Amino acid sequence: MTLWSHISNKRQLEEDLNTNVNGEIKYLEYGIKGDPTFWVNGVKYNLAGPYNFEHKIDEGDSIVKIAGSTTYKIIKHLSQKEILFRR
Image (cartoon, rainbow, N blue to C red; front, side, top):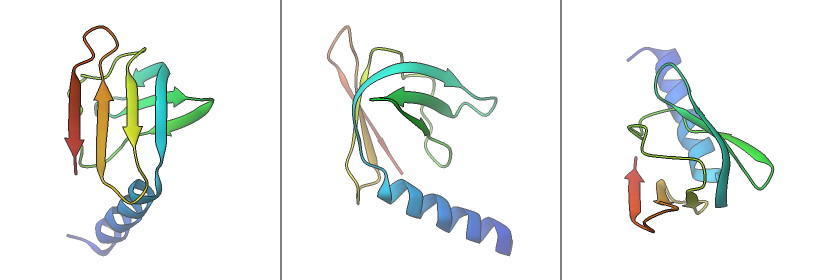
């Protein structure tokens, strides 16, 4: 691992740990690498990094992520099924 990769990974982890989000996904797009970018409560989020969301997030789904945790919980809007994504 290069020094830049290590710094980048550490910064990404710090940002991830500070992220606090709870609400309905209003707008969603996936980048070339499959990383989702979405809006919740008027705030834009980009979930880049070690998570593999596998295009399982859809507009209308709810997302919960508590600061200090590295787990994202997606609640599907049609089935209410919960999907957990862990770092």
